[in-house]
Image 1 (cartoon, rainbow, N blue to C red):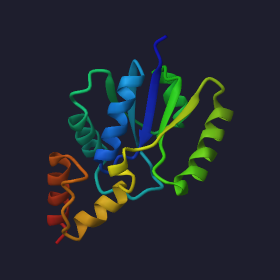
Image 2 (image 1 turned 120 degrees about the vertical axis):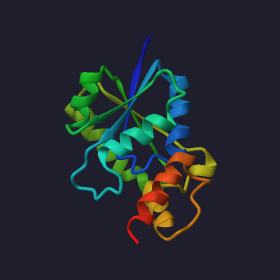
Image 3 (image 1 turned 180 degrees about the horizontal axis):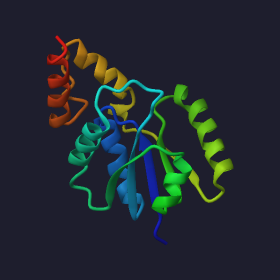
Length: 162
């Protein structure tokens, strides 16, 4: 049975934790769609085009992974893409309550869509895009947590702000 998973997020920027989860998912599903969200409720550092480009670059070696953008309900995007599973990462207990609420609402909006939670590899359990942005903004070294291209893009963004 061919199953397509969709992994939504802002990916501002994509981290090694995201990449690890996507690589692992690519071994579990016949197709993984990484859906970069246009989220008007979040202030993002990178434009949608920049987030798409960085995400595509980081994941370019994964043949069964596609990167798209979306600005609709996730369930509508998933239906258009033929996804049966929403993939979500759980880093800590603090993520659990919110993610369970989202999963419940998505199930209510689309009975054909299941949510699967994956936990990150231990070395990425504390990594988040917002923490990475803050470290980079303050001049810290983020090379352990993001790809070289993302590290360079962060450095360029923050060098232009000073």
